[in-house]
Length: 114
Image 1 (cartoon, rainbow, N blue to C red):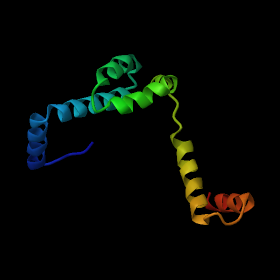
Image 2 (cartoon, helix red, strand yellow):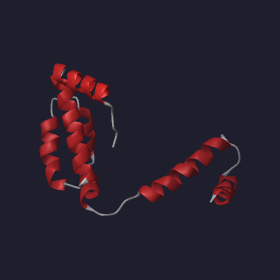
Image 3 (cartoon, one colour):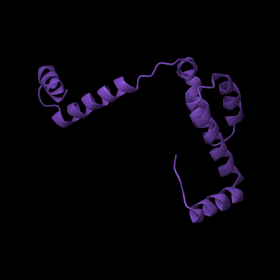
Image 4 (cartoon, rainbow, N blue to C red):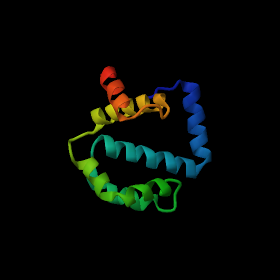
């Protein structure tokens, strides 16, 4: 977690006290972070309702479009983190090739990097 010194904390406190909409957005973002980290799927529907009409409404709308996947992510113990890392590495290799060569060269470079 990010730690800030007393001067920065005073600035954040003053900023949030002067802007209720910003304070609300920060509170909603923190609530979402806690819900995800602690996998509290039961709080999702209420959080989505609270976000209507706020700065987080667009983000919440994106979650609503694939609600089944969001619920699964909050309730199941599995993670695609290791796979995502491999996909990212493969995409980086592909970008460095800049449309040169075909699948065989990409396969060779990916296996070489592994």
